Amino acid sequence: MSEITPLDPPRRKRTDEIVDAIKRMIVEHGLGPGDRLPQERDLISQFSASKGTVREALKSLEVQGLISVRTGPGGGAFIERMSEGRAMSLLSNFLFAKNLTIANIYEMRKVLEPQLAASATPHIDEAGLKRLEAIIGIYDHEPADQNERWTQRMAELDFHGVVAEYSDNPILAFTCRFLQRLLKDLTVAQDIYVQPEPVSRASGIQHQRDLIAAMHRRDATAAAAILTEHMHEAEKHMLDLEARLEDRFLEEVSPVRTRKRRTA
Image 1 (tube, rainbow, N blue to C red):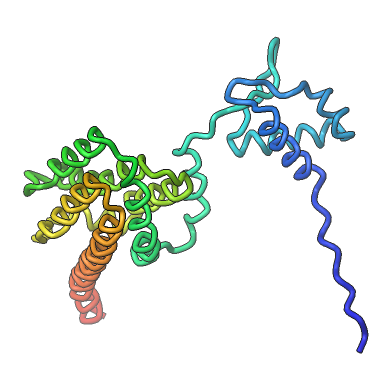
Image 2: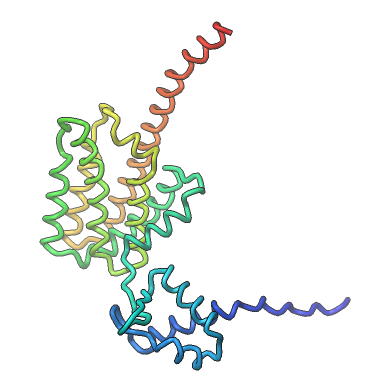
């Protein structure tokens, strides 16, 4: 049997290597927002690269939102703070054509939201608990109109965003807030949120009040269990509403198709 020779990894573009090297430089030198990178000529010398390659690397970093390039006197490449909103927008753009569904989002939320609640429980303070109580007050009653209905649905998601603020796991917190944002932006979810469906939210609100109580007594295990039940119930609620919306759409379309067939 002939010996298999391992393949060499594909050679990376020089531009990508410089991008990674500059990122390491930022971390190793403790550079922060507003700090300036070395001048272009110094980067060319440091990386033994052409002016075009260095400029391409800087442009890549600028597109990623990590630096801004300013021209004129006192110009150069400056470190920028990547906002959470920008990071989420970039991820949303990536998922734009992926046919994302409510079920996809809740498949993740059912796993992550209980972990998030558990991680936030030891750290949330009285001010945070009062914020959660105040948010519940936004949607603990029937809405007066469509605008209030929309505000209530957004506040229901904001409740979990506040919980995320107290997590000691930044990746977990970011991911959960991103999933919450996806629900706000998903077209089918938006259609659901404005529907005047006569659905009782008493159970969901009770779960949230139970969560506040568990967090107040620093019971992370109970907080996770409450959110597990809450997420499963919320998923069922949303999928049921989605099915009703689809049925209503089909009922409205079918008579139109019937009339067209008769006319033909």
